[in-house]
Image (cartoon, rainbow, N blue to C red; front, side):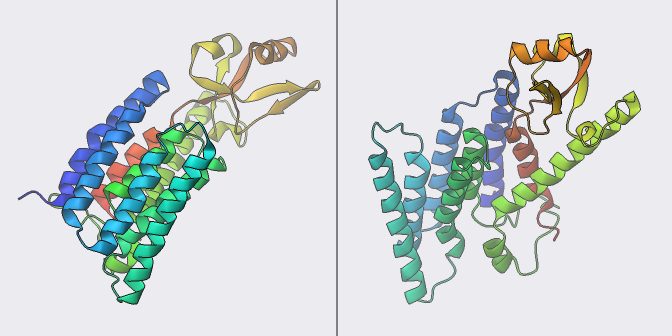
Length: 282
């Protein structure tokens, strides 16, 4: 019989692969991807968890997740639903403490994780709403560490897994692998630039050089600007204007540093696959 962990992996994979492909090709991920992935995730939670404490936590998570799909005319409606979700969370937490029931801790943590990712998006730590929704979907889909996929995966299961999945939830493990893959990607950029002879620190690890006439033909952010007559390098660039290119051309720049527009959901997808297959090696 197929394990729930493997079923979750099988469900998540096509959604995330499609999201990564769509974001790379169209620079847009349909909200339907996360909406329907959320439906499957909550269905699995309801199949697996049945106690009142767990149902209260799942209800709180469902409100926090799906309320974000609605564009309210008045912000007070959004605030009301968030307050309701927080009340349900504290109700589940209070009941768990009162009854000394800690086996449902991973479920109770889900609303906290959703609030965390919504907050990180609000304060621009997470720049894309699709990225925030992707992480929220993972938190709902896989509240505990996967134990059984298919032999020999996952390769590493922590000895005290019940404690680890509370202090370092699975979605954080996904972020760890995402960060590792991202670091390897930056290192590969540096090696490529070194081979080409385009050396500069730290820009050689953050982007690559293009002929200035080709900048608008690629999905890239321009890392250079002319500001108040001075040549400035940006390591976290934003969208540029035609005037920025013309200003660089006037000061004699024929090749410029650019940063590839690779959506973060692509890195999250790789991190998710690695987290499922490799497990927690820490």
